[in-house]
View: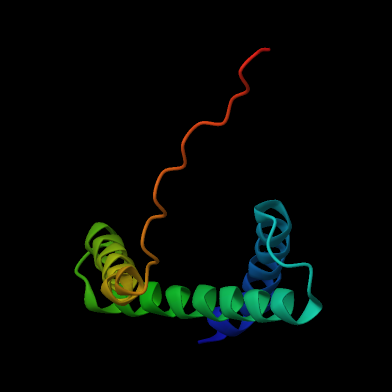
Length: 104
C-alpha cells in the first residue's frame, strides 16, 4: 500500500503529460474544457489500469500470468464499447464523380 501511495503522484504526472502531448498531436478541439476532460479520463484510466495490474500480481502465480491477466482486461475493456460505437457509425457517403475541366 505504501508503494502505491508513493508512486501515485508520478503515475498521475506521467498520465497528464501523455494526455497533453497526445491531445495536441491528435489535433482535437482547441477547448480547455475538452482538454481537461480528456486529461482526466486518461489519468483515471491509467490509475485503474495500474490497480488492475497490482490485483493481477496478487492473484496470479507468477508475473507472466499477471501481465496476461492485465492484457486480457485491457482487451475486454476495449472491445466492450466496440459494438455500440459501430452501431452509431454514420453511413458512407456516396462517391462523388471526379471533377475535371474540358480544355476549350
